[in-house]
Image (cartoon, rainbow, N blue to C red):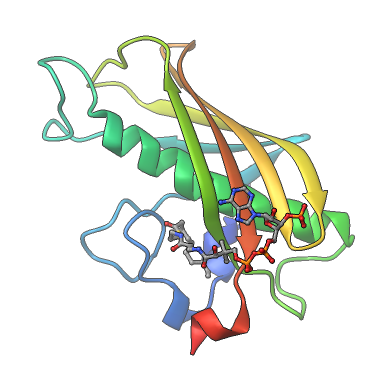
Length: 156
Ligand SMILES: CCCCCCCCCC(=O)SCCNC(=O)CCNC(=O)[C@H](O)C(C)(C)COP(=O)(O)OP(=O)(O)OC[C@H]1O[C@@H](n2cnc3c(N)ncnc32)[C@H](O)[C@@H]1OP(=O)(O)O
């Protein structure tokens, strides 16, 4: 992971305004996804205002983290499946088709969260990933993301 450029930094400028992961969105979360062995990883520290009940993280934020780490992981997996680097063409751009989230335990505020992604399937234009969120080494949330390559019509 060290010295790796996150996949989101390869997205073109005009596609980098996503609230979850767009580097050009000054209000967004700026989620960054990397390979760590066969898994993908991302880290995020919620702000004090990302609160649900006192002391715990808002579930909608956690879903957002899973969403964008899932689409980022999909892009990483698609390049890997073709044995290509992310700066090569044609570029892979994914959006979320389906997002499932299970909140297993309350997620504490005030600590860095770790997201880890497993690539379940790469098939045609679709990549399925399973994402966990951990706080203090304990998994608190699990998610499944179906990401599909953006149709050309979406980008016009
Ligand atoms: C672009 C660069 C990065 C930008 C920022 C990253 C994004 C951050 C995450 C987001 O928030 S994205 C915003 C929320 N998502 C959307 O607005 C997507 C809206 N939905 C669509 O545009 C279309 O439904 C979609 C492109 C996702 C799929 O339409 P298609 O017509 O291209 O899909 P198609 O029917 O050809 O199906 C392709 C595969 O995906 C599967 N699929 C499609 N929708 C599904 C679904 N909802 N659940 C499960 N699987 C689904 C489908 O079964 C099929 O699998 P198989 O190849 O195995 O047959």
